[in-house]
Length: 344
Image 1 (cartoon, rainbow, N blue to C red):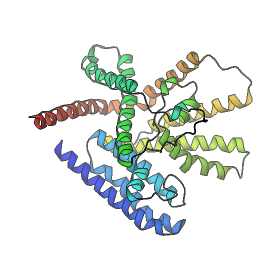
Image 2: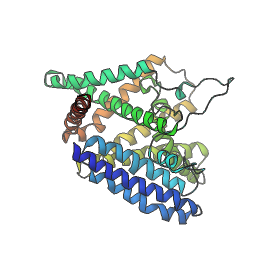
Image 3: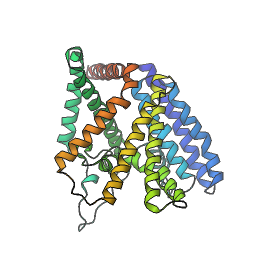
Image 4: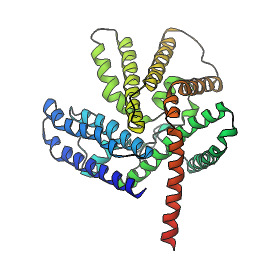
């Protein structure tokens, strides 16, 4: 564990040095091709750094923060777009906005209507999710006697809870460091009433925002030259899902170090096809949407079933779920030992 922590420290020291270069040097270069050429070496480095890690959790988080978010934000920065423009006031803010899925929550005016999406997660909800996650780790000890579909459902729940809890923790650290409130990354995705609601307004909102700026909008603008605006929007949506699938393939590659099978890409392409179809139906047909309970259940069933079909198999075949569970237990044991040593 100590050796992996040292490797993680080295990875993030390289990341800090690289982001400092972008803040000090690249920001002084005029936007466009020249600034793009100045940040490309950093983007290449960020694609290499996760290879120096072996822990699934460190690989997953570092790939998300560096290979995905930081690279996309730097590419946007090259053209004066994205969260790094206008240039943040200091290196610390530039580093945090480049690498982490954060967005500063704006103070609402007294007369403004409250948007629940921007509200922080209630502490009791966070406590319940932490408790459920702890129970999950305990239940895994009995997975051999549980029905197969129950175990698969637990894995889906595990992915959601761990992703949200990790990002909540990172957000809390960054919020304290910057001295500002940030918007939540997840917005209760289990309450989604449509696929469009799930993917664009509830699931991993900061990644959705980056994909919207770096993929959806440029693709939409390009295809507006050839198609009507409504068609161009749909092409942009499909492009965002395709890129998301490719980035997940990259995460899988770093985790298992095997050639991609493209199953996870197919999962996101399928989600894109279903979401665009839903948008078309909403625009062209006059229909009364079903009750929230019915539509919400249908959305969760579709995402879960297709996830078990295409998202999970590669992880299960390579025992990634076993490694992830073991690492969680190892981290808990490591933290307990550190607390015991410090208290004694």
